[in-house]
Length: 397
Image (cartoon, rainbow, N blue to C red; front, side):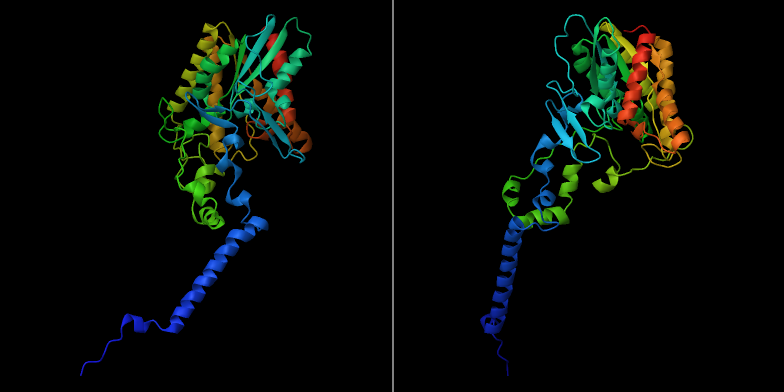
């Protein structure tokens, strides 16, 4: 005798339907609470600053922007104050042409002698507290107080993380149109890092990448109205890491989570001699910069770049043993190019590093460097005073 099989409708008892309704009501209530409460109450981990940081909405938070020839360059008319009331207060201002303040006028006024300073972050002034505290600005102030016959202006053409590749291009298209009479080149350490990157090639493709472009989904603006969506995006995806890493100095960074890649990445393994290609790239670019400067009627001056390490035996890429080795080699390239091109050479590295060592011997700490190549206000003042004396000694003013 066949047993009757109950229909599906018979299997759905009133009790199971009630449970399902309760579950749906609870979930709906939780979603409503999650969507509304964080909008009125500040809950750690669910604030708008954490779920939707300012840099996601506006490029105004970024001091640099993509450039058709330079990967990236300082944004014109950018200004920002960092921790203005705190002990580490700093401020940044770019002029209308994208140079760090004080920016100079075009055309150059009659009777003015203009000095352009070309380099990376230590020239731009990542360490000093303000635009006026960078070494190019202090050099201008120093020369103004020396009672020279001509008025001297100093242009800060430094940009963080730029190598000689970007500096060469910027010299041709951004700096020389400013009609400098003297161009100071204070760079080498970013090229030292580039030379250590795996498989170096002549055009630096091993180190540089194209500035990445982020194109959000058309649904993103609508989805961002939901706190639940923002929380999911923030804590269960790598969306913010990707956006934070967008265009980070346009380096070909090692694989891995962005946070790990940007924080203290280690020097690569190098067996025996350092690869020659990166140093040859720097030598070639430096010779070209000297030649182009002279071709436009200005006088090039090469400076050795100072680097300070708190742990010279470490494997840190920024200031560890291998970086110091590559940096020293780059310094020798600067001296070689100065000798072969007969360009004036100023030993800025020896001056700054000797001052830091003297402070260490006397007090156990130094106040010249804020980190590796970056200078403090005191370090920038020391470099500016030294350069002012050397430029006059060399008869360049």
